[in-house]
Length: 195
Image 1 (tube, rainbow, N blue to C red):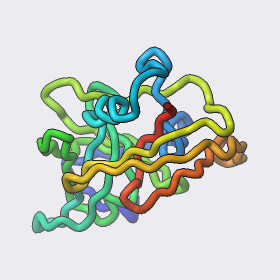
Image 2 (image 1 turned 120 degrees about the vertical axis):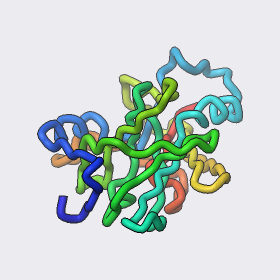
Image 3 (image 1 turned 90 degrees about the horizontal axis):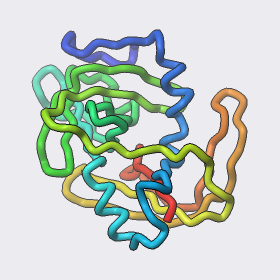
Image 4 (image 1 turned 90 degrees about the vertical axis):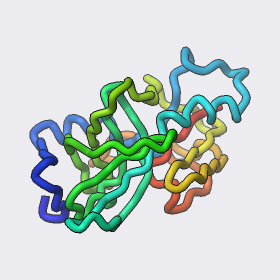
């Protein structure tokens, strides 16, 4: 981890890194909630409201405690596992995750990283169960309408709409999903849901 300088309190465990991310790499492209968790009749604002507790902001600090980088992420387990952009922790001494209710939790463990898709899996010790997003077991259909949901870096939330334009096989990654939804740097590691 020559590019990531995380304090001694953070431990990096690389042995299962590729296995973990072979299943999670495409999250940055698309995250669908399973059909059992949302009905097709849910209004979009209700869908977004249900997702908000899963969204987090990640803050990276230098040795003096100054913020050197920030990004977005989301919980993928009730135990406090978070997916975020890898480059958020570049050069960091330590990091925190802020939940939608404004609470800050220190990053305790870096499970895995994937340089190629710029993802990292973190763990924060959260006193109550986190609100994870669940992955759909199937890929979406071409032309399916989707929303990219961003937040909470400051207090702003953002939503962008589009469709699934392609599902492609990339030899080094597996299947990826392409979207027409416009995104900006503020959408880094933002979940994408179908309607």
